[in-house]
Length: 198
Image (cartoon, one colour):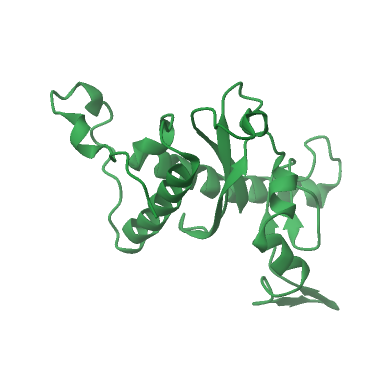
């Protein structure tokens, strides 16, 4: 599954208009590819918030590799005389391609498309959940970055690496404390301090 999210930042000094998104804020885009276990298999961050998802994809290494047949090659499945390769499932904001599949329109009358639609839609839930877990576990991603762009992008990448580490080590986020903002603890200890990354 492939999708993107916006990470809010303060207006950058250069090219600020490029980072002003349809959400009426300054942000950069994070594009991710997630498997059914909510692990990020590919992650690209730092694209200006004003870009469309399709343009972010076309500017990514993932796109160049997929178009060059360097990824998504196996496993394959033989059905009749057709070899079925891997696909990335996407929403309607991404272009259709030989390696990109989207759910069929809800208005379709084709019985096969109607029965396949819930499967594609259900599969897309993994990426929505993965981004939700990422932003809830690493709450710095849900707030506006007041640091420079370089730090913000590197922080988003670091949080994603840590997300995968937690998933792989079965360290699932404890959702039993839904409202820990009012727990009387000093939550500033969990805030990443501003610093320059060289």
